[in-house]
Length: 173
Image 1 (cartoon, helix red, strand yellow):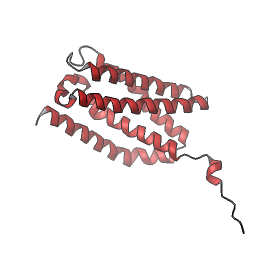
Image 2 (cartoon, helix red, strand yellow):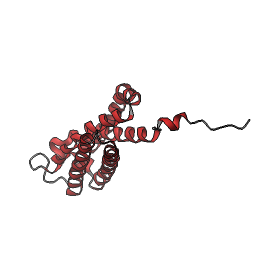
Image 3 (cartoon, one colour):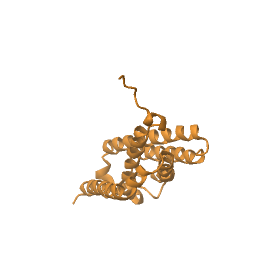
Image 4 (cartoon, helix red, strand yellow):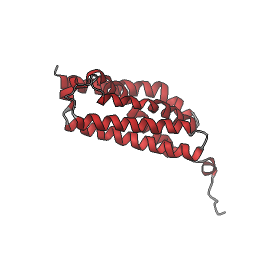
């Protein structure tokens, strides 16, 4: 099997495995949690995205790894990780907390989308060996990051304040 096909297979299987795990164990718990606690749990996972800086660490990745992919991926992950940490640090200041929840999810989701675009442009699947030790990041870590961004947005969009949920329109007799 070619490196390109193996990388693509690994990526698809990474999403399938995480969707199975997420759907069975994580999603039921997140849905049952208070929105604040669910977003804190998601932010905790994303606070480790500083690890993406490894894409620009000499000796870990091949010097042939395209900079068009590596640099944006590294700094996009770093920015998302810092925003997620700020989310956790501002948990007691609710307006700031919600601002950072929106920020880390928007920046993080855009980062992943642009990383996929750059990976396709650089033909990364055919050059998967250039990832070196970071090969596991797009295969194991990125799928759960993407899934949790979708979950975070879903939870934010479906949330209604208690006053809105209890509102019943008046009917004319």
